[in-house]
Amino acid sequence: MARKTKEDARVTRNRILNAAVELFERQGVAHTSLNDIARHAGVTRGAIYWHFANKVALFNAMIERLVCPLKIRSEEYARILQDDPIGFIRATTNEFIGKLAHDPDFYRVFEIFWHKCEYVGEMAEIRQAHLEESADHIGIIEQSFAVAQEKGQIKRALTPHQAAIGLVALIDGLLFNWTKKRDMFPMESYAPLLLESFLRGLGVEENTRGKTVPA
Image (cartoon, rainbow, N blue to C red; front, side, top):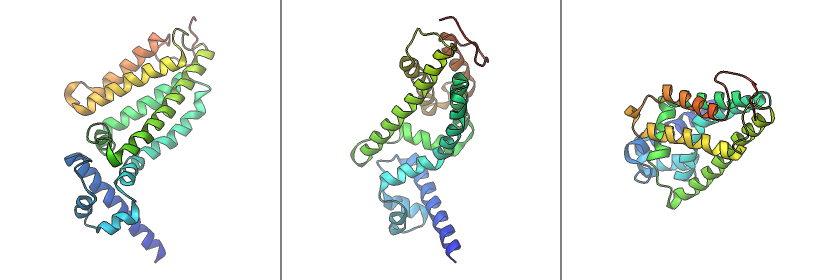
């Protein structure tokens, strides 16, 4: 019986999250209340509070449900960072792009994150949390470029931090604009080419592993 109760709770939690995604996408986050989500999910408001303290917690859980598997993969990729930092950057970037292009649930959540949420009021704390996550992400990319310089994979024309900021600006700009208007360009074919162009600007030869370049 306990096992079934736990499974029921999991099913209810996912039903609430699915309802939130649908309404956030349709109405925007600011214009969607917990009452709206409860009605759409076919549960009571109390059921929502059983699983989530407030809309902020629900919003975070919506993102974490899809991003956690990528975090696990990132831990696996981290094992190759020291051996092949450019390979690490290619693998993690292309996996994220692939998920966005082929996983409709993943796309919908990031469309909401980028275009349908105002980070003010109760949602302001989410903005701060994601700013911190973004800083961590930039730190990992910076570390990758630092190791790449040590291995002679890239030139030292830019500092690792400058290179990391440039890469984040490129990829975030592509994804932000593509999720805003998907017919603007074929993101899945453009992004890898533009990534390789950026890396070649740092001295990386396309599809090479561990190749050194002149400083």
